[in-house]
Length: 268
Ligand SMILES: NC(=O)c1ccc[n+]([C@@H]2O[C@H](COP(=O)([O-])OP(=O)(O)OC[C@H]3O[C@@H](n4cnc5c(N)ncnc54)[C@H](OP(=O)(O)O)[C@@H]3O)[C@@H](O)[C@H]2O)c1
Image (cartoon, rainbow, N blue to C red; front, top):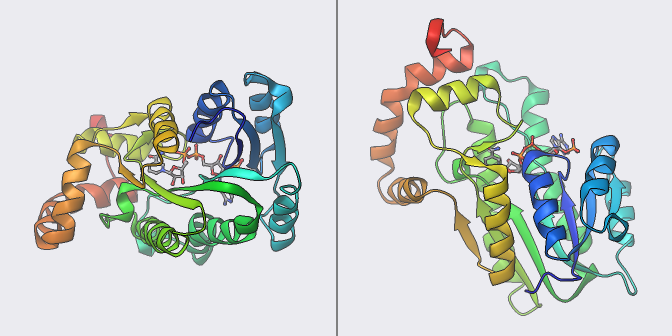
């Protein structure tokens, strides 16, 4: 899809990947509806984008059903939608025993319930050719200790994208799925950065991820996973999960100590 003058709805616009994506899309000439709960951050972002007057902000307090329907109602007549990007997401780097019911519920609601409801609400708001881009995670395809709930929600993102893409095959709407690996944003706590250093896990900048996502939209590539090794591990996990059980089992004590915050000294 040529992104020039396309109408794009972007959730989690104020976040690390969201902001980088907003800049990259605006540079391509897209018209953005920046969606999120942080009005100040989105206003600042809008002001810094090329042609700020072409972009809009949609403030969501809680993504209630009413707010979602009101957002969808903005897209009718001459103002229909070309691209919906379900980017907002949240995580807890914590063992399940450390997570409150509210921690668990917030991840399920943010990562799978809200994007599914929003996609449902937008289905009849697209121009004849539309794209839904769902942002998953490599952890949605490799269940990872201390990210069990997050992994589960992102696995759901993967399956939702796959199933809906097949369901909408003849509708003119393409459903794309992208799974970043660790990305340098505020989503990850200091403990996660320290753990990644300790385990030698590679990460990407938010701008790198955003630029690749823009390419996916332009080429309408259905699925994309970030990182050569991560792509390989996803395959190994699918075919030989026992090997990944063993590999992650060897790292379990380290992962647990970072999740529990019991790491001392220079490893911290
Ligand atoms: N960073 C990584 O390592 C990484 C790796 C793989 C996948 N991802 C995925 O990439 C996407 C973007 O993440 P990011 O790294 O840019 O994270 P981020 O900087 O923390 O931004 C996440 C955005 O999601 C929104 N959000 C957070 N909690 C929310 C809630 N409870 N309800 C509604 N919206 C909420 C926030 O927007 P508002 O506060 O403005 O509403 C925030 O701007 C997410 O789906 C994430 O799972 C990230």
